[in-house]
Length: 384
Image 1 (cartoon, one colour):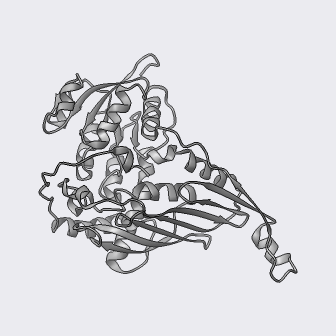
Image 2: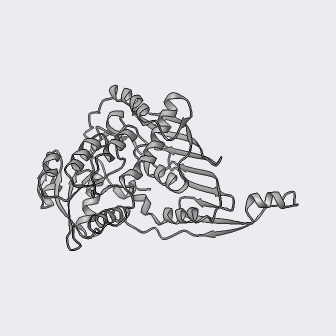
Image 3: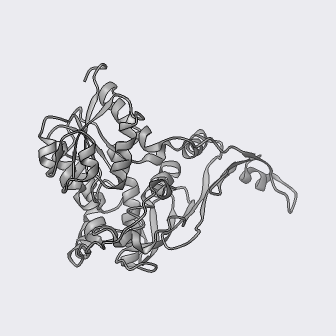
């Protein structure tokens, strides 16, 4: 596409997150892109007000000739089928997270990507200045070799009504999991984006501990890395007010995020060097602590969509190509498999074995009857 053109975007799904993307687009927060068509099974007041063609069959939207690219914002269990249709039609694809129910679904979907086709995933937290700051420091070597990682992310509280008004959420058939596949997929993505993938995972998941659901709503995992470092990840949707504490410890310093402030500690000399050279029995290396909390006022979703459009029009490098979603999904899958089989799971994940184990649970899972309850929805309150 030439530089003077715009991307004609079709949106499949008109749930809460799709509405947020459409608002970003129609309010001008995404440049060089226009809404061309929408699809949802039943017409809504929103679809009528948008002033663009409305389809009830996603295949008709894909093959309508109205769109250059498609945003898929439908329930997770439809991601593979819908995404495959878009890719086979030669359109560019932005997929809401996660890429699928499992790593095997993600791998199979990526295999359908054609030459010149832009395929991205909505990993919006990669645009958060907090995490980009942390990543630059880790990659720049200021912390030295990483020795320990830790993230307690338990402020994803969800009340029972969140699940009751959905027929697919928190079911093996509809979502392939719960806490790990939905809320914490963002945290797992950032965790491995900053600290790398571990060699193994030992996890302890609780299924339906806080909610009337069949999938996990609490998880604790221990990671082992190639250099001998260890990591801990804790997540929950049943704890209030919850905790968001992220630490990355290195030989020469540490990053500590307490949910509000980001602190950088720098040691002189490094811990190992000091330990082996000092004659002070209770000595410690000199440590300087600085508050490096960045301004986090950014529309993350709009930033990822703007990058997607730039990749289509100008060949910009994607912030979150679809392949980037496989590692966080592998961590989530490995944590579930570890809990089911009561063992440490080695990475890279055997995606075929995991798919077989998940398929057994899907066979015994059904979508729920959606409760007819009037709810209040504030999407800004859902972001962490």
